Image (cartoon, rainbow over all chains, first blue to last red; front, side):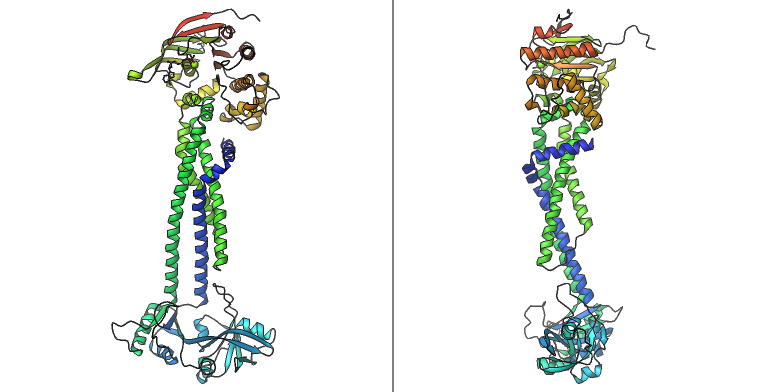
Length: 401
Length: 239
Ligand SMILES: Nc1ncnc2c1ncn2[C@@H]1O[C@H](COP(=O)(O)OP(=O)(O)OP(=O)(O)O)[C@@H](O)[C@H]1O
Ligand SMILES: [Mg+2]
């Protein structure tokens, strides 16, 4: 009986293909919105998570100026190496502190050269980045203090310049500075944002300042809190220390920012959640509208087919058999919309993933869920028209032309 | 226990009334009708327009219920059945043929005839087999795949009759089965109904306006103003 109803439903839908498609447009849009939003959201979350794990645990970073990255920071006094030393000496619960400056420069070895990111920092830098040395050794404190011209190579730079040769002990030229390679960093791969984290070299900050940037300033200070230490306490202590060091009066605003990586992630996650909720509401509304569309067209269909229903009832169809037939038709219609919506949503999510360079991360439970939910829409909004059909008086129905 | 001399009549209407509307708009379509029809009879119902013929047929076919009185089908009081109960009674024992054929459009003859079997849950291959045999019985072998629009009026009515008898009913109800057909085609349909009655023992009750159609039946019941005015047996038409 169910098979018969399914067959009848397909015939009825095919007979009015265009109308059927327009009818389910609401469901298509609703389902597509849910699928696209969840898939894109998953991608964004995956990227944030990857970024977090790439930056090491319990990471705080201190930058001059207020506001987020890109916001103009008026009269923000730059940091110096002494600021990082003050943190290390006066703030408790810290595992590593690294003052960091960066620039882009060309690195040359023999006939090979590559433009890469040059980081000036201390031996603690790789600890704050949850990085390890694969070959050779880390920078030594003595080299950092003396501002020796030595460096660590990222895997990409090593491959480009040395190929299969052993780089440790060799001298590369960074701009005009000849630098001795002391180690190679373990490969880290792409960041979730798509940039190559291994395309870098690291040298002592003092050497960087003296030979490359020509200033004594430090762009950022990275702090890695010790395991089991509350990063909020470290953040507060650092803030107090810096207010004091920079002579900021009570009531005045900070001219620096101490950010907790975890907070940033939480903020981003919260934003994603709000967006997801909003889009979810839009999707829910359009699914309801879609359901009403289906109900409307099923009512029209019942009216158009009154005579047919009369015939079926007169020759022995029971009420529930007619009910089943129309309910199945509504469900098939709605599932058809759901299916088109799923394909459309995945297409949109794929396009967005390409455009925003996010991972394309399809959650099968959401796909199955959307499919089942569209069936539910069919049941909920198909029931009333189907019941109307089933309760028709066969004599009246047969009299209708 | 079946010691009684006579089995109950297939159909028994006792004091049956049917009133439409209420108050000012009240119309009495049937007024205290008594009627008994035995298994195997061939009855023609006649009477002027509005005299209650279709109302009677609808009640007999369990499509409608009396406002008063009792209807016993093969001794079973139909008044005690709910809508699904009446539907089950109809689909198991009664075949219906309408004036307007009432076939499903864009649906083949075979599928139309299969329809009552679909709702009885008969398996597809057995269904097609039974439907093809019913079409053969009404002389439409070879037309299984034609849709109603590809068939003549007489052929469409044959499909409708095939649909009514595919379930092997005890009773065949036909409300003006020749109302839309010309004289020659009407004759063919009457021959078919007569054969079904004579050869397979199906009880046939038929409404008609035309005396020469009614002449095919062995009993003629005449209605007037919702009452039975005349009920007589008549000689079988010589052919
Ligand atoms: N649904 C209805 N509502 C109100 N009155 C009705 C309804 N159906 C039938 N009637 C009335 O009941 C009476 C009997 O109608 P019925 O259809 O039984 O007549 P009939 O003998 O079949 O007539 P005809 O030969 O024209 O088919 C008529 O007066 C008709 O107007
Ligand atoms: Mg009538």
